[in-house]
Length: 586
Image (cartoon, rainbow, N blue to C red):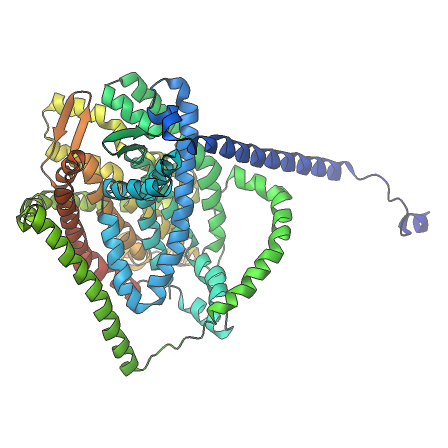
């Protein structure tokens, strides 16, 4: 009987009950995942249909404050946010890699990134609307592209700074491993450099997504040829409610925003942060790990594995095609004469282009208003600079210890991440009615109250990077400190400050630039018929944008860029070099 049962091709009998239950659960999980993917694709296609209508027939040219429209508006805003996030990731990979791998390009791209970060979203939006409407004349798609581009400008810079720093501070053993195996540059990027910077990239991506929510009102309310268009979205809904002084509609917008932030965090960011834990650079396994219900569900499903097998030939083809970029065998040392000649040539070309642009800008301003137009924004910039310095200093003292505490504890991370994400993502514009009421009741000047509004949009960069930096510290180093009994200030001096310093510098430089950008919406507060205006460069740029005064707008943006670049050159860039030289995990 036993021989018959073991003979090949004969029936092996029914499966045991436990195996049947496991198979039933797997089928159920596959069905849920497949249904979710199909529903997501259907909603994206259904919502995306409204982006291609023409102006003349677009019923969405004005936004209704009827709460029944909020689900559709929320879907449209969410589609724009994820489209901008995808563009930001592509931009981050290309821009950060070019800056990290070319010393000459780094000298141009990183200062340019400082300037781009300091340029207000309103300035980008003015240029983007003109360009995209020329590409898609008469179509709502042009306005949609302009809105996505504006949201992109509020997301991309922070992600690029963080990923650039992870590339230039790649652990030495990983660099030597890549060189010893003579990996292609394509393979090195996907197998070594990207995994090494994954944790910082994910956390900065989550923060940048929150920055997009902050500027949603400005991105969805667009003026074209003195005609105001409000794209369907939560931001434009909130803007219309605030302009009308409708507190009830503002409340509905706030509730919708909270639902969106919590939902995106649960369905997207929490699974992504839990998945990124696999790229932690340490020799011993952490005692606690982040968990995600959605990630656990995907891991139990067969569909991701099936998709991976289906895409495997494409991956092999891309790896073969990536060999055209060469192997990772560039010399560690270059002949000084060749290097000096290349530096001089590059400096002459880059300097000539910049000088030509500055001369042309000076001629334009001299013809329209005279070069004296820079005097007022230079003085007003000092007031905004004082607010930025106070904000960064207070945020560092308050949020770095909190971020370290959260980053060291996966349990606290699971609890605090959605709360921090809500706070970071919540647009300060939605709080303007409360701020106006509070300032009028207390008699507090908007010159001081503006610091609070700027903090709502900028302080989270420091907190998120402190969390990411603490999470990136290998647990074996923390356990060694515990075994040696190192506590208090000595623990901070020997482990925590060196461990989080590179991430903190990234957070500090983006918080500083973000504060300058947030000044545009924080130094002019409007609700209903009441407007409070602070003394500062942000209010100057906001007034010039509202009047359509391009010479004063250009002067204000140029002065803001000057302040940001000077602050970065004198402070943050030196701290960057210090982080690369002394505090990278090499």
